[in-house]
Each structure stands twice: as C-alpha cells, then as structure tokens.
Image (tube, rainbow, N blue to C red; front, side):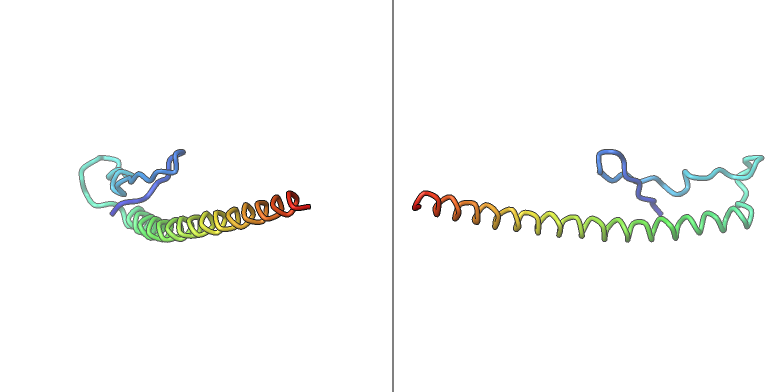
Length: 89
C-alpha cells in the first residue's frame, strides 16, 4: 500500500508504507509487536482517508478555478460594455 505525500511543488509523490517502520529492535525480521502492527494498520487507514480528502480538495480547487475564470469572463464583458457606453456618450 502506498501513502501519498505532497511536496512543496504540489506534485504528488508516494512513500511505501513499509518504509515508515523498522522491524523489532533485534532486526530479526520477525513480525511487529501487536501495538506496532495496530499503529501501522491505523496509518494505512489514515493515508487512505487522507488521499480521499486530497482528491476532494483537488476537485474543489478545479471547480473554483473554472468558476473564477467564468466570473473573470463576465467582468471583462461588463467592462467592455461600459467602455462602449462611455464612447457613445
């Protein structure tokens, strides 16, 4: 499983969850202690939820950008209309 991480450039890179922990103190390769295993499982859930929230935030940012562009289009149209009115008067 992969955990998303955002860097300063807003590009997404991925960190393997397995890289976020080390085996027990003796580094014997034995399974993690139950408490550490539970923390790792919680981290998996957290990363999954974080990815969902990031996806939603990205979608909202795209919608906001589109709405902003539409508003700017209408502002430019209004300015053009007002400029035409001033020329006629």
